[in-house]
Image 1 (cartoon, rainbow, N blue to C red):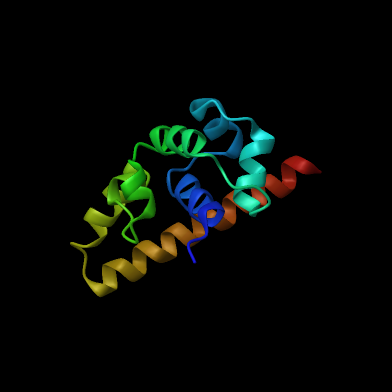
Image 2 (tube, rainbow, N blue to C red):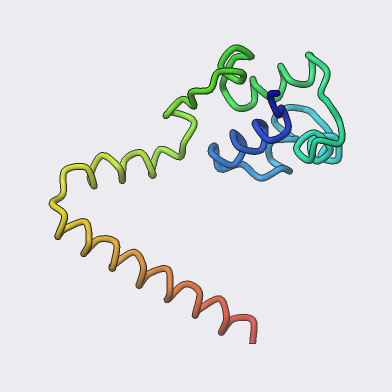
Length: 114
């Protein structure tokens, strides 16, 4: 059985949208969107069409098991293009670099909360 709520959430997150942002773009109440994503409410066809439109896809694409690459953040796509041209050693270096940046960001967030 197809889980509409899970699919909405998956596509929303893939698009890098918060629930608030998607609800505004789709003209759907945030609580309605929350109920849909949690499976507590099924969307009407009209609501689902508005959600799909806000995500930049058709209803057919929504129900397709294949996720369009262009739904992902363009910067992530660009990073993948560059990464695909690197050697294994270069990829390991890049991953280490990104890990360090991530650790520094977590540390800075911790310090700013103190």
